[in-house]
Image (cartoon, rainbow, N blue to C red; front, top):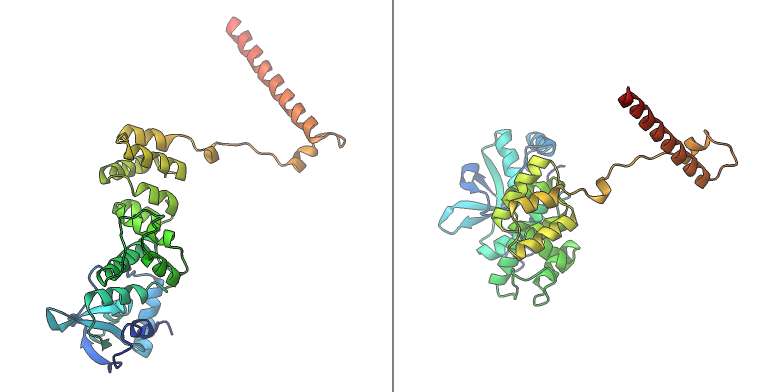
Length: 305
């Protein structure tokens, strides 16, 4: 079945509580988790999930918690995609497990119940890691979101990374992405900008990032790591103006230089079998020079007429 059972991830936070009995809740009483970092897309997978629910119903209850200000309304911890599929299928209520979680515990549960997904965008990881870091901090764990990628004062990032098979430095890199303006962050999701250059760009001011975005769109090019590093350095020195960004971004990258390539086997067919590669190269260059000199002589003859 297409539905993914997620109760186990949430149950890890309620080991001392008895698992509740599922109850049916009208969908108008359910609300997305505040600050939920994961996208709910109307893609092929969603269409397949809708079809599965229409055929088999909801096999796995969603996980919710009462909203503190109104116990008749609920915030979704796990099941945002299923709720959207239910709405598309025309179903008016869903089975749910209700847990009375505080905000920080709920945040951790939301993050952990979604990060195991097969496809997680960099932006989703970025805000998920940040949310979890802040929640752990408020629960009393030592951490500092302003630390650099190579921070050493906290093990919180290491703990988060260990659960996901990533280093603590990588966790901090993802969190840095939350400093990007939305348009640049979307380019990271679309793989137009790689993670490491994106981290460097996150240190630019919002105004500098907007200027960079304008140049990217006008010139149809994205920064390499070395270009991003250079812009970060100039930004820190207060010297990153619009024309500077344009100059850096439009500079030809070594791997973008046009090249003319020939296959050696194709060339050997045109030369004596005993010719070495060096002899072939010298002959080709001599022929090109002869051709160029002939063109110049013809041009001079035409000009003299």
